[in-house]
Image (cartoon, rainbow, N blue to C red; front, side, top):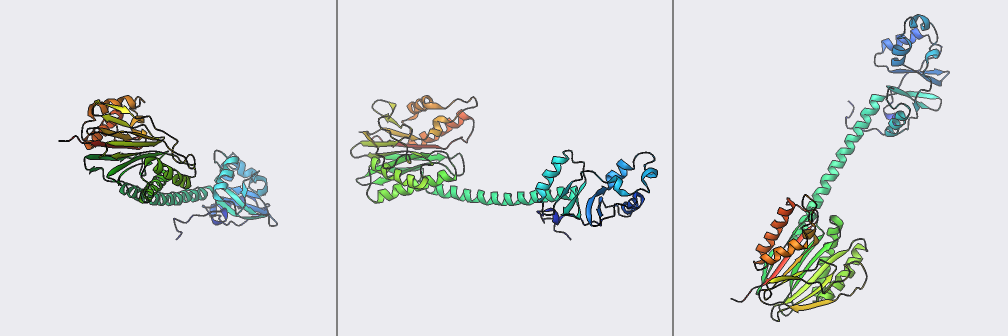
Length: 399
């Protein structure tokens, strides 16, 4: 029994052998051959072994002999008079898909039910169009099956990569003395292009980073992983200022992405004992600093530079300011301000500033949760077109 999953690649594998007849054979004798073999679609005609053409059942019965008195007129005459003119012929090594394309080129309505396969002047046999179509259908089924298996494997690998990437993120909430931290990412795909981190530094300082690779997906995820690895390598080597950390990460990303992807990145270092904050910004969204004394948020746009991965050995400028009790720092990626509602309107900076003005004094975990909910309510969806990262840090007021 033929394997239903077997896929042929050329006509030789689906050709039906057919015994040739002499062109001088009488039409009545050809009719008898067809009547004795109901499955026979066509008969090749050869003169001394040289292929002359075919006579098909459909044309013989329904075209030539379907007219009144046709049998009386042609019955005793040689079959050569009824041979198909310009019949379709193809070589045995013709690929099945190309064979169908060639057939459609000469017969767009696909009225032909079979065609001859010839090897030089010799007829190899007949190929049924239905066999050709079934074979192509089987080929597509096998291909689709292979694609589905490949897709399932890739999906599983991407899912695992996403889990690994999420596992590399720090805990959503943490405390460093009087400093409270809350951060999280809502990715737009299995593997995100955003990342955030916070880490202790010498002299009881706290480092913070938020970054965004152009695009998202597997390649972006690889860049974020390389960036985080380089960040912690630099910290272990004693590099602990925002500008120097960005300098080292920039060269690492250049080596990884080779200028095919850029990463915006902001690093901040808080010194709770001194009440100070130092920021270096590599093309990232400007952070907001809530001043408890002023009672309102302000955008920190004093320090900015090229994104990471843009230029080798790029230097970054630092911005230093105070970070007093009750102050809060809001870091985020552009996914939050660029998310849109049904009318195509951005959430925007005005809404973000209004939210911060109203909720900046809340604990970081609550403020982050409410900001994400506000964005979801605005868009009408719990998913976003781009990754959304929010990192909020506050210095608790003394009790």
